[in-house]
Image (cartoon, rainbow, N blue to C red; front, side, top):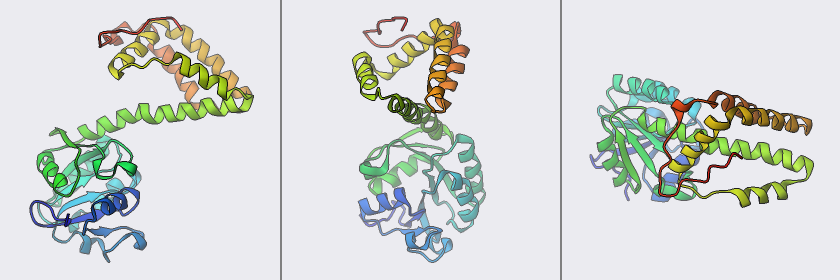
Length: 274
């Protein structure tokens, strides 16, 4: 792997942090790297890093993704592929795309769907935008092995990532809220054992349909129950941030038959009223 793209120009990285360094070390790329922290860069300036680059991977923090496009687009070679691999909202990516296009570059919305460690170059990537097909070829040429195009509309890949994160990061936050309360009263082992006993292994299409049906059918009662759960956490000194949201969401879903999804799969779950 020599760090060159299919079109012959060199590879540039904007951001040499966790993701950028993980990818670069996994493939031993001879890439030009620019980072605001000199210890992470091997180029003296963004202009030096981007001059003549045909493929640019932008891997900065989410709050700097649009700023990076605004600050560095001017240095891009005409027709360069700017692969925005940051976890930001679709509208942020569309704003960055406009900046890159105005500077003569070609913007690609890239969603990274798993942690870069330990996946490395096997991490799943979703690509969207008019240049996504060409970007797929270029990314595979530098070693990425799990790349797919999801459409021509910039923001489609990031929408998948952001909406998925509602569940993935939400579960993490709920886990923390639950464990803080369980630890406060000394019942963590019992709570976790009860979850193991009741957990149903279902494909996500079935699980989503089941969860929504439960809220539509029993949301009012469950909202009241969760209000009591919130009171329980408060008494233990745990701020029920997530639980308060559950109270509101359960109440809002109650009776909303228009939101029912058809359970998919051969074995629908047992529809208890728990």
